[in-house]
Length: 266
Image 1 (cartoon, rainbow, N blue to C red):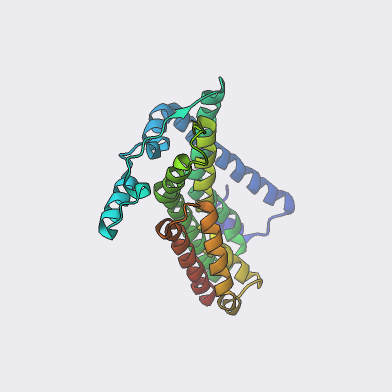
Image 2 (image 1 turned 90 degrees about the horizontal axis):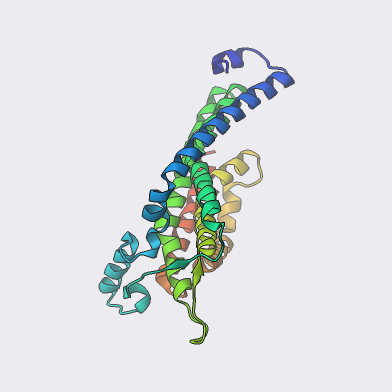
């Protein structure tokens, strides 16, 4: 790919733009493929140490829950009881395909910074220096916020959801057995959703550049947004206790306030 300075000095034709885009896609595909193969090879050890870690009582967040319960003087079983979850598999091919899909999604998550870097390389020559500085900051912010959301989802939101739903009992006559497919589907969906939810400031900033939203609009509908955030938090973590709800709702509210600050700096 030509250096960005050379690309900025000349006007590329439509087909030359397509060629630049094609090369970027091939590079991105190559990085993703290397990561996917690496995760596939390491998956047996990663699966036990990372993916299945929330199933065990020694998971770091469960110790924090017990310390929080002691600090609040609570004896709630949800916070203090030991937690061990055993998964079952009823599908002959499930372990192999879950091996593949987990390696794929982990490689996708890991490749996000490189994806944003390729986006930057593609659009930077068409931007003025002042615009380049703003877009560069936005892409860095997007990477950092995505990983913050993923980490919050993995270490707090998913363990809370798993702990509640796996122990929820509709009737004593019903024995709950959680399948491997169900566990992985919820694990990937919730963690990725949290990562995407943390992109709210970046999305708001881009919308403000397009003139769709502005600081006054976000401030005017702040109360409506908080209500929607609380409802969303209740859906993601339907445990019913204030602590669990706050774990999700407070970061999302802070993200909304950060979105207002970003539009203010426009």
